Length: 271
Image 1 (cartoon, rainbow, N blue to C red):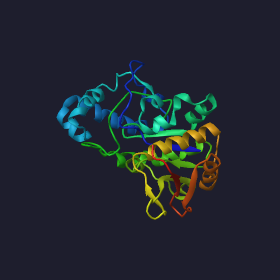
Image 2 (cartoon, helix red, strand yellow):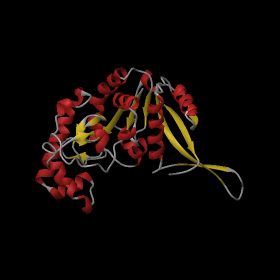
Image 3 (tube, rainbow, N blue to C red):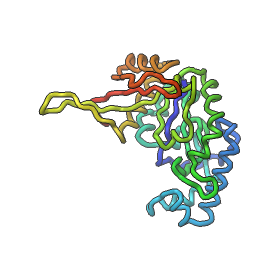
Image 4 (cartoon, rainbow, N blue to C red):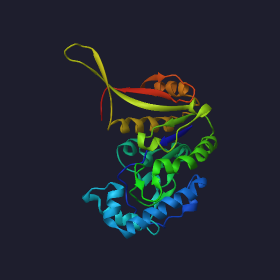
């Protein structure tokens, strides 16, 4: 199983640590594409702070992120699983996994990134600010920039993780960088989180798509799968595994040619 995660906008800044070693990152075939983004991002943030703020879509209060980007080559690093923070990563709780689950996380989790393409949770990276929705003046839209390199790197990563299921928990912006095709799409499942509640007037169940708090649910189901040692190889096996772990799950769509499954996880509390 390979689990694809979005990054977090907020990131923990390493207090120290060795500087970036690009050659040490997972998916080494992405190295040229990473170097191109890193070079342009550092140059942009070193040369013109106001232009960088506009390109990166940063508010005035986040102006300090530009200086951090300018120093990416010399900044301290820490494992990506510690750099990425926020709702999903709080619920995932990588630091509190037992040793076996942590090993599975290292082998099965990939975090997508506008700067790095995708990294493993043990890859040492600095804190940075560069979302997949950014359009750099030279390289253009980052989603399109990553599409070609990812078309080769991701199928290789799936096989390296043992083949089987791809659990795609990315947000829509990061999904632009890679979409499974053909036989691999039939082994890919995306997750939608639905909030179920009873209408006090009619007594009928109503469901709505959860937006912000869907991240917490995705973090929890990832943690549960890792902790249980679950290894589903198909979307149908994923549905069965999540039900066994106590989740209310529905298969929204069966696999179709060229399309992943959609799996609906139904929650009664939003937190």
